[in-house]
Length: 327
Image (tube, rainbow, N blue to C red; front, side, top):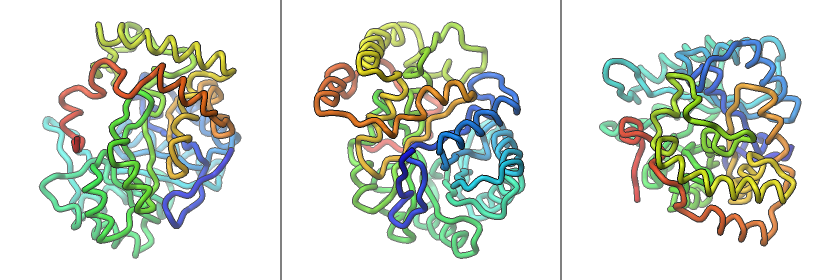
């Protein structure tokens, strides 16, 4: 495993992290024993950057991580998030009271007295982001968090927050089939010395070793709400994905390893956090940081999966309304 800095001043983390959303059951049923084996495998592969949130399984993901941390006492960098308030009407809360209350609940579930990185999971648009940066900065001063991050934000939001208190990381969706961050956000992060943390870098399983069949997904699986996995959109996406899989095989790589290698090739400040529930799936891509793309590889990938190739939106209407649109 290779390592990168999580922001201009660190800490040093594995070039590939692990997203722990699936431990909460959002992509289908799971159990703690399977999740613990996955965490063991990640650590054994050199992965030292773990990402979770209070909302993942309504605390279950953090509880699993807390159990593992108590058992293994590993040397890792831990990130969690808060801001999404579920209920009859989903809303976002970036207030000082809410963020503090939720952080303390997260710390209790995780069994730690601080986290290295704390994100606002979504921006509350009615609250100035400068106020939020000040709130998070005070948490840094108190030793509750090592740094703060923003999720699904625009370059201008990042700039505004960064002036008040330097931001450590921005987490937005980014992969070979979701390319919006290339239109200013990745560049702004590089300019400011902010880490860019792509989530869903394997396109929610579309770049997985075995691929996915949307018709076989369990009821309640989050992907069933995403247009790219539905009807004619998915059928048209399959042709491009098949060509990508063929190229990966010719290159001697698994599809997920090639997808992650492409992301790592976009800049030293990118630290993707693929998610999985199992040690077996993790093994398909854990070595991606040791792969180097050639100029020929880059050209071939640009032809096979050109910018904007994916059919259908990356989110349904409800989810799409929760992210910042800047292009």
